Image (cartoon, rainbow, N blue to C red; front, side):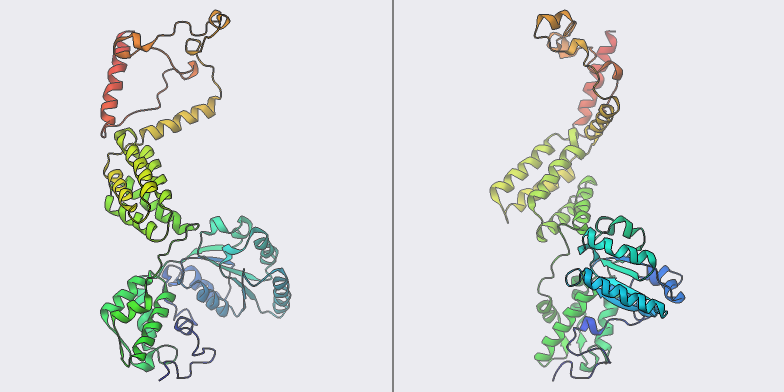
Length: 441
């Protein structure tokens, strides 16, 4: 028996993927995004008023951006035109604008839906601007990338940016159950059941992507039908899903989200979380040397002199990976991660660097004190270069009371060691030296 032999509703062909057949036609059917579509929320209010603003819908794959755009256009009685960065050009846009102007004169608005708007370059995005400003059309752009980085500022300022969230496990479950039970568009006529372990696995592996969930469900259902069975078990879903690629675009926002979570886990002294985020990056294909470089920076910035060995561990891990490569190279990286996360933390050196940089920027090229200047010639010595310089090794404990900063910055302090790890010893040493210098004055 053909799995999709029954005639679907008008406009929905049996050859369409399940995710397309189950696409909601109204807000009441839409699952998720309650922060935008709930009672009293922005988009619910727009639909009730029948008046749309230009929007940028930003969210992960499978969160409903395309569906939502279609529903919004339909609710406003608008003609919805799809514009593609791959197949559409300036000539197509001119034709759309001409038709939109004609429809506008007859009282019918036009919504231009631009999917993956971040693929359009600056010049292409500029082409939309005048038509959005004049109200010839309402623009709804959809993107998986942060529009602050990918959409030009003039266009972004004329659109409301709305963040869509990945679907929750409960919401993915709702989509699955609805597709299994729907006799017109879904799989309901085939009386299929979904084993609970398989359902839980499907929800987990979908990673909040409704399209992934429904397409995997359809593939597993086809396997069950081919084997003459009416239950979709875990094995069938595992076969249907194979291994879902981790959502991780090395040039996109998720890249920065994951590396941010990695660094913040190290800083928060959580080796377990740091290891998880490291493996997420490696499994998704991140360059291991990028991770190693970030750990070298972290060791100096966030651990510093609380544990000077940390920088050496990070550098050693980088060199070890160079020598070993994958997959064994993950082992020294993991050792470095656990060491850095478990080390005492101090950003005192980093803060001292920033403070010194501020003074350099604020005061410019201050004169080097005469006693610190190099005096290789008689003329320089006659001018006072190097005069009264105190050679530290001639003094007890090699400590000398001498001004080393420019006069304008006399007694300025940048580095204040903390009480963590080895830095506590540095603090005690510096305080002891300061006391000796004071006692001699």
